[in-house]
Length: 83
Image 1 (cartoon, rainbow, N blue to C red):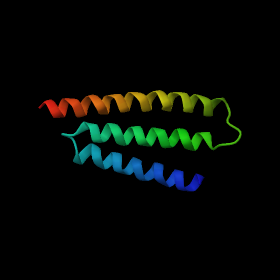
Image 2 (image 1 turned 60 degrees about the horizontal axis):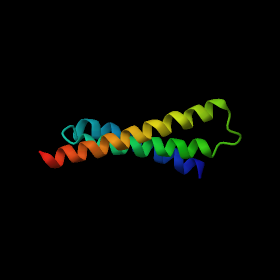
Image 3 (image 1 turned 120 degrees about the vertical axis):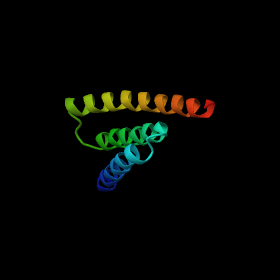
């Protein structure tokens, strides 16, 4: 399971890098792909046993960043609909 999650994180990171160049006019795609990558990082970190202090810090920061990216993605979708 850990290997699959790690490969998914790499795949989403590659897609995000591609989306930064290709979908410059659609920032919500980048926001949502970053949110998915952060969520995968949180899940992968939760699977580590035992979780040390650095793991808890990573979980907290990635969870906060996930929320920010999801909110930014929703705002960008609403902005695109208005234009």
